[in-house]
Image 1 (cartoon, rainbow, N blue to C red):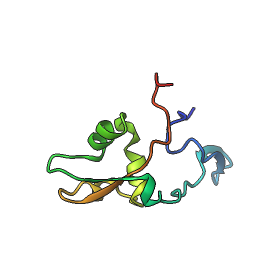
Image 2: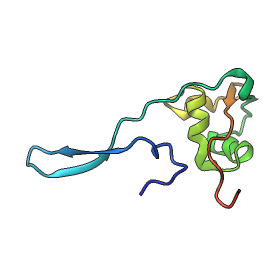
Image 3: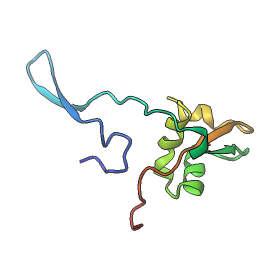
Image 4: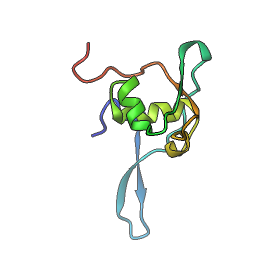
Length: 101
């Protein structure tokens, strides 16, 4: 079961059939969503000790939502965003946190 706040929650599943005929369930390909417009996003400068999960924890409230920041910056590799001095886009929150209304 995929959690509702997961980046894969809306991708759906499919079945891959191996050469021996056995079926392997797997996720469908995930495409990056449309980038947020500049009016609904916040820019943040990455600090020397920052990692994307720490930025997500501080600004989104959940370190597991680092992928939302990666998506908003069209980054397939989140490590490329964690460069000190780099400006990154923080998108508007797309998911309610557990325990929040």
